[in-house]
Image (cartoon, rainbow, N blue to C red; front, side):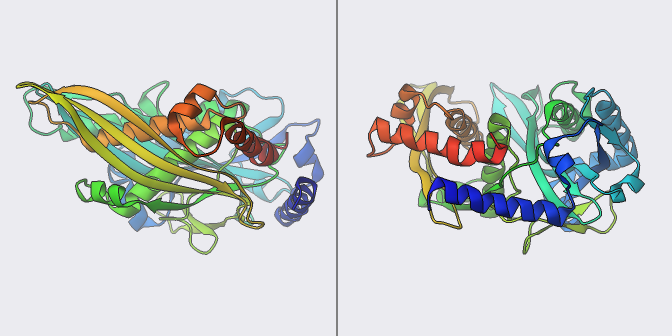
Length: 402
């Protein structure tokens, strides 16, 4: 199918979706008066068992702080945003006033890791969330923007494990205490220039995360399940893609979306389901493997190389077009004291995040030196360049409505 036919098909789908959501043309193309966005509050993605599994420390700290207080802090940040086109409101009654849409910050999952560095026990935390824009009365998702924040390494002397109270302090930083790196500060920055009126012309989603033999072997030596790793890799890719390309990304299905619906809970109340639109474009990730190689060693030091290989396939699930389907890898060399406890999984996570971030920065104009170094393909540079540009033109620009 040619680009014009595909565009006509997507436009027809988008008009049908807007009509189904009750979004009139004044919302899609802008209006003189500011448009009302209803602040629905902070939510947990999934049901209570999902929260217990994916956000145990975060939920515990929220229970201590109080979800009402956290919502108050979030609302104070929202009120600092000065926009002529948007009026944020807490009035739930406005959700039934025609074209009003709702906004929520849905907490997704947490991650905490420890390592021993020069005799110190160090830890850091990460927190993932989704900025959700949806029709409140119809419970239909309009757009989702992944967020990810992390703390720097925090180290403690003369301990064998990282203290629980210190770990909870990291959670508080991740949630709201850090003025720049918390999830609430990231949320406030996102809203400062987030597109609401123009609408999004299409949707994209990480639909599949396949695991190669060496990735599965690595996971057996880690504390991660295959499901948790798939969730992490999909979220890492989606967050980087949304941030760098300024587009919404539908939530990954594993651990939250069943049959086109995503459970959402505001507090400990029963979850209600947000209907998810179908993806117009899809991404398949293949974590082909992680490898550690010893390069050199002495009595006290060892030099090692850690390598990760990732396959990325951008495709159209309706028409079968594959815009970019390539394998790439990244290697990091480091020298370590033999007395240190080398957290190989943490190294693998770091190089995975770097590779994903650098790859998604190659659009619309790929850097030849980066592509030559990291993309392992039989295709010539001109062909690869054309494929990168096709992803930007046919997918990213189309979603943004450029």
